[in-house]
Each structure stands twice: as structure tokens, then as C-alpha cells.
Image (cartoon, rainbow over all chains, first blue to last red; front, side, top):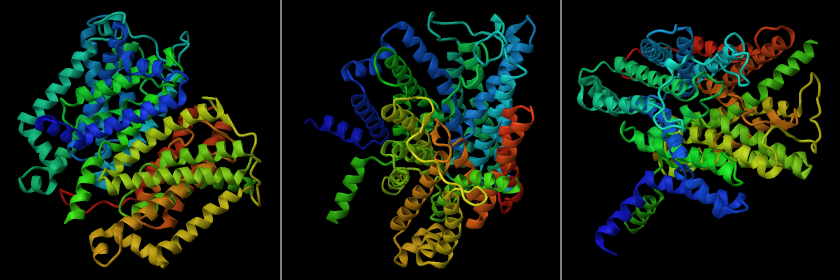
Length: 351
Length: 282
């Protein structure tokens, strides 16, 4: 083999991210071939499904929009090395606040209403995440657990509003009424779901990248994440940075909810966001918390979801396949590569 | 009347208690397992399904406990051997198991909805309405105290949790100790799952319903004492009972009543947790 190709191969095999992606996809193939009566057809529809027609390509991109935002949310919280596990609840709260603003707003100057909805959702999500950070500071209560529990409680409370006071009586789904046409983001790629919220998510990713990279606040954020003691000796107020990290994180998760409501559904539907938050964490880790890297890894997860959707329509596999592949990728995403581990063992043995 | 109330509260407490004790072992070993939720689900699923398919309750429980322990061991091996972040592996476990149980349900029982285990006998109730599995919960809590504070393994486990390097330097293998702790955690979570699905002889996706997280609250607040875990689980069990009773007797919104046990546990958690030392970088 040529040295360059060999080098490329070794570094790819030694790369933990590529390893865990390969293991996840490989395990997915095994699962499909166990369960399917016609494995070849199931394979092609699962892995090729998202590219089969412009409609599915559009839906694939559309699903990646909330994934990018939750991925960014998770990556900011990881950047300051705190765990925000309430993303799922924050997405839900954002969607709820956004649709509430949309429903209350009159018929004029809807663009202003949209801006207000986005800001309100961002602030609410940020506030919720901030609470956990605050409790950690004042009570010493693990932010991991409190953020999850607050999210869990809020989902139940919002479900109460959706089933009772705010439910649209004529709709078959448990949801609110539709927001007015002016609140809906324009469709870029009809008949698919792809909407102009795409620019919001891409813009947020780029903005975050520049914030982290080229501003002093971003520098403080990265320093606190890398080494708190060092940051403190450098004169950075660690607590303030931690608070801001959590606020940004919660806010972006809520943006994901409101963008999805205005872009795809046009109303708040119960349980619309199953998995946006949890997958966001995996997406951020695949990207190694890099804001721009979040975009391709969000595309990857959306691809798995749409592929499973398509394959469960076209062949005999269940949509849970996507969930399981994502889970397997998630298991290995922070692990060292097996290849490196073997090399390491061998060297140890020689020494 | 009072007796059946106590019985119902204990029945609601047991799964959390068992899972929380399992989590406690991992916490004391220095690597908290946050995948309890997924392990409980595995225990609930496999103990019911295998019990149903073989017609034997004990084979079922054995399967549930075994699969749960297997996943728990995979988690610690990923973390210790391949240096994966234990929290991320725990989250992965919760996510994977949710999909895995639905998929296996379709494969083994041919149904995606609620699974009914008609082939296994109902658990007998004794005394105030306890199942024998509830007695196991009590017994494990007591035994755990003895194991953690009065045996060699307990001392090794706690010393590894405090400082694994020092422990290693006096000849304790942190790996072996942690693997044992995770094995115990898997077994206890499997039992917790069995305590969830066997009394009602059915399984539905997501039936663990946040219990793994409540158990974690118990672990975090217990300050390393099994009695503390028991206290938090009892608070949750009692408030779950209250919530269920109110749902049956009043027309207050059931969704809001469902939040009651979680809100109460959270508030208690916030009240009894200690403020950290006032230093900027903790």
C-alpha cells in the first residue's frame, strides 16, 4: 500500500469518532439483516431513502434544523463542562412559548411577532437552564439531575395545557390551534417541509463559532471549560461564565422548539419533539463540541431518522432501528478507538 | 385501610429503592451510573417477557437481572477500558434501551403496544399487601449498609471512590472493584424492573417513567448511606401514592398531579442538599 493511503487508513481507524460511527452503522446492518425478510431491499431503502426523491431530501434537511440548534445547545454546555440534560424540556417550553405568542398576536406586523416569539422562547429556555446552574451554585445540587427533573416536570405541565385549556377542539391531534399564516416560515423546497428556519439554525451556528473564537467572552468560555483553576487565576469570573453558558444552552434549545413549530407544524403538537434534546447531546459529542462541526453531525442523525422512516414505509423494518443505531453510536462516541487500544496494549507488552 | 395504604406506598417505593441502592454502589466507587433508567426498563421487559415465554417466574426474573447486569458491565468496560465518559455512556444506555425494548417486543411478542404477560402467575401478597419482591428491597437496603460499612469489599469500594490512585498503591484494583459495583448495580436495577412489571403483569414502552432519575436524586442526596436512599425513595413512593389517589378521587388535572412526586422530590432535594464551599471554582 502507498504510504499516504496507509497513513490515511491508520488515522481513520484510530479516530474514535469514525470508529464509533462505523460500529453503529455496522450494528444497524446486522439488526436489519436479522429482522428483515428482504435485507437487501431494506438496506437500500434505509441508507438510500433520504436521497430517493427531492421530497425526502427536503425533509432530511428540515429535520436537521432543530438538530443543529439542540446540538449547539449541548455543545455550549459541554464547552463550559457542565451537563444540561434538560434540553428535551427546554425544546418543549420554547415551542410552547412561541406558539402562545403566535396565538395571542393580532393580524398585523407578524414579523415583529416572530421576533418577539423567538426572543421570548430564548429567554424562557435560558432562564430554566440558569435555574439549574444557580441551584448548583447555591445549594450544591447536581445540575445534571435538576435540569432533567425541571424539564420532565415542565413537559407534563405543558401537556396539561395542551390537553385542556389550549387544545384545538376540532383537531384530531392533541395540539393548539394553528398560528396565522404570517407566522409560518416560508417553504424553500415545496412539497417537502424544508423551511427558511434553516437560515436561523445555520446563522446561529456561525455566530456561535465567531463568538467562541474571536471575542473575549468566547475566550473566557473556552478557558473555563478547559481548566477552571487556570481561568480563575487569569481573572475570569468562573461563575458568571458558567451562568452564561447555561443561559445560551437553554436558549438555543428553546429556539429549536419554536423554529420547528413555525417552520414545520404551524402549531404546538403534543410530543412533537421526541428525541430532539437527547440526540442534540450525541450530535454535539460527535462534533467534539465544535459549532460548525455540529452541522454535519446533525445531518447524519437526521439522515438516520429519515432513512428509518422511509424504510419502515417501503420495507419491513421498524423505525426503532434509527433509535438503536443512534444509541450505539452514542455509547462509543467518547470511547477511545479499539484499534488504538490494541496498539497501546501491544506496546505495553513489548516494553 | 391503613394497611393497604402502607402496602401500596411500599409497592411504589421498591423499584426506586432497588435502583437507588444499585446507583449508590457505583457512586461510592467513584463513577456514578446515570443509565439506571435504561437498566430498569431492561429488567422490566426481560423479566416479564422471558417469564411469559417460559412460563416460569424465576427464569423470567433471572433473565431480567442477567440482561440488566450485562448492560451494566458493558457500560463500565466502555468507561474503564476505552476511557469513555461514564455520563455519556449512561445517557446512551437510556436511549438505546428505550428503542431496544420496543424492537425486542415486536420480535418476541409480535406487538408494539402494551405487552400482557398472561403466562406468569400473579405475585402473591403477604401481610399488608407486600409482594415478596418488596421484602427483597428492604433486605437489600439493610444488607447494603452491612456490605458498605462492615466488609472488606465495602471499604475497598469506598476507598476507590475517594481516591483510586491511593487505593491502587496499596494493592486494591480499582477496575475489579468497579466492575463488581456495576455488576451489583445491574442486578439491583434488573430486580427494580421486575418489581415494576411483574405485579401488574404487563409492560409498556417507557414504563420506567423517570424512576431511574428519582433514584439518582436519592443517590446524590444520600451522602453514601443506604438509609438516605431509602428515605428519598419513600418520599417519592408516598407522593406517588398521593398523586394516584387524588387522580382517582378528584377531577383535578391528572397531568398536573403526575408532576407532584417529581416536584416534591426536587424540592426536598434542594432543601436538604448542602451549599458548597464558597469558592469560585468548585
